[in-house]
Length: 491
Ligand code: NAD
Image 1 (spheres, rainbow, N blue to C red):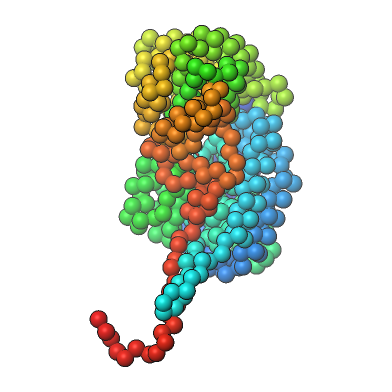
Image 2 (image 1 turned 180 degrees about the horizontal axis):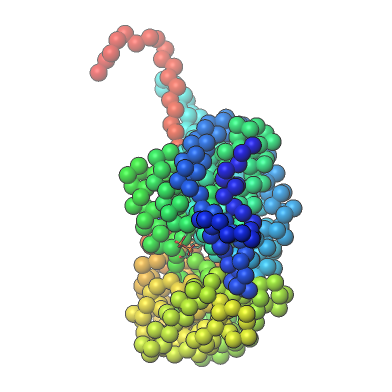
């Protein structure tokens, strides 16, 4: 079998070839992976092969599709160490977090999609002159576009429901992190090939930069796109999908707020705030970088939060002691520092961290977690996504002020409320303009959760019933049973 899609990766090759790209390990500065972007011809070939394979794949019974997806889930578990290593060497995430969180989540996403497609039944009801059936049909060829912060989970969250529903999926990972999606694509394709060679192209992974993503999105054979990335990328994908009215799910950036109420248990609030800000070293779409703390509790919260933040261990991703690893690249670390430095120049007060990389580490990608206060409400640090380990503590006066402040951005991905009176905290949570709101916790994401954003943070949902439904279209089928043949056309 010639597998052009897989040939577009070369593992850490030594000789340099034209068109090669290098993914750099941000922890060490070494070359992690050498890869080649898919050519225009390969994009066209992969999509037309996908369209052919999808016709055959959609005919495979749901129970058999589900069995294949469960087999993929088992294979993810069996290759857990390799998957964790793929992502860690390319984005610098902590190995233990990838091994214990991301890899099991990716396997669970395949099992969940398998369960869902087996549960789905067409809805039939008798009408006056026949039978009305509501069923779901696959889109055809779907494209998935991934971001670099959760590469494996991102690929699994798009591939699994697409394949479960009988679509073909062509997935493009972020250029910084090609390896785990490529490994996942290989596992899926091996299993499709074992079933029938006609099916193998129902799943492809094409490597590439933004231009390859754009080619995929604009292609006329593609009917559905699910993309994870920044707001500006989402806007381009939205515009490029308009001409052919492609169905879209966009999972974009955020600028979340965590509200700490006057009755909050401060130890819980500090735990939640740490988790909300420094998972994945702050490179998290849900990062609650705006900590709105009731004035009556601000001093207490700040003291304990700062003590914990200053104690976080910055170190290499493979060390069991590390709590904050490197950011994805030195360039990204510099851009985070530049945004914080500009806010400090405008009068904000840096109370933890430093405006330079951690000197003791081997690359300039390691930043100590930063906390600021006295940030002006209109400062870009409070209105734009930073995507790094940066939190701001802001005072709040009362509940209405908290809600107004939390909702004062164009984003609407997530938010959190911490308070001892759970009913009150939940009522406040319901007033927040965010697709996901956590009360007394943060970043918990059960498989049943429909995850996604309002406003600039995206369109549609990923996961849960809503997320699964996005991968198929409803079809109403009316099967007529006239009692007697019609006697001609009666308008
Ligand atoms: P990015 O927008 O630079 O790139 C994301 C992906 O889009 C990459 O694969 C890129 O090659 C591709 N791309 C870029 N332009 C494209 C185009 N015109 N057409 C098609 N594809 C195109 O984002 P990033 O830096 O990789 O990731 C960080 C961003 O992702 C942050 O804003 C973060 O909040 C967001 N994110 C959101 C979620 C979520 O679930 N809402 C999850 C993770 C990351």
